[in-house]
Image 1 (cartoon, helix red, strand yellow):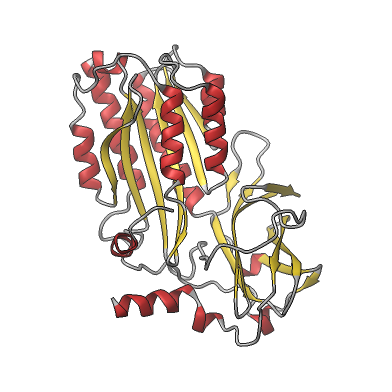
Image 2 (cartoon, rainbow, N blue to C red):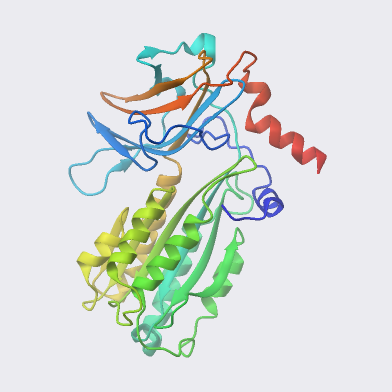
Amino acid sequence: MIRNNQTIRNRVGMKFIRSTAPLLFLLMILACDSDNPICGIDGTAVEENGIILTLRQKADSPPAHVSVLLKADMKSDVGRNVPLTNLRASNFTIFENDSRISVESDHAIVPKPGVFISHTLLLLDLSGSILEDSASLEKLKDASTKFIDAIIPASNSEGFGEIDMAIDWFDGEQKLHQLVPFTTNADALRDGIKRIREGISRDRSTNLNGAVIDGAKKVKDMTGIEDGVVSIGALAIFTDGKDQAARKSQRKALEAVDDASQESVSIYTVGLGNEIDKSTLRAFGKDGFFFADDIEELAAEFEEIATQINDDVNSHYLVEYCSPKRNGDHSLKIVVSYQNLDGSITTCFDADDFRGGCELHKTSILARTTKRRSDD
């Protein structure tokens, strides 16, 4: 993740997420043999008996910490799967090499505060037709403003600082145009939307494939873990047309979407009118595709995407515990049970260099980042 560490600490304000929230947090990237079939692959989703678990990140570190960041969804036979946003420690069970880990003796699942940020990029198609109709442009601006209001927490709310947002736009040119850089300031985002005018674009073509590639990479590059800050991302793409510029292929755009989705990035698309290619936008929007027949429906679609982004943020969990293992590679199975449903995911960890003295409440991210802040 390429990011200024001090900027992140200032933005997040080292906010502590309340212990009842479903977000638990990560220590460092896992050193695990990627050729080992039990390890799994980041982004792998497994569904068993109604619950889908997606592996996002893995970590281990001496003296004996093991951490796995995952996303939990409830399978739906109709439409999109339902993010599980209210799981607690009691919903999780951990197995090492098929043997259950004792929660009481090993602090197996620790619901503790952490440092977390979610990055959302709104990517708007301003390539021509929307700009030619002042009434349609105003409705797009209104829908975008509602999206901002639904995504960014109020400055006096408990969640302020945990979510930031940026706005870019595209037309037929090769590169994205930045409207507002990533910020937690909703007023700055609204002001950016107000600056959109009919003459903002000089290229009436549409570089949709290129925009998808660049937008996905931009968000992906901001995800990961740095100095104890866990970052995930979301990309919301609006268009009312097809790719016309042919600067990049659809295959390359789909590869960029797949690559980003494996790095904790959720991608949504919303199409307007009859000139879009629904199948293409559905393929780009791996986490949701929305369609508006006319501009009047656009605000509702934007607000629905914002709701799904917030639900996706709150369906991420970090399972962290102290392992009793002291050497070698070991399988790690996490089982989630909710109501009458369950699901599991299997990965692995490397216990070389593990030793005694693992106490999460003394060596967690919270303790280390709090100390660093006091030293700055």
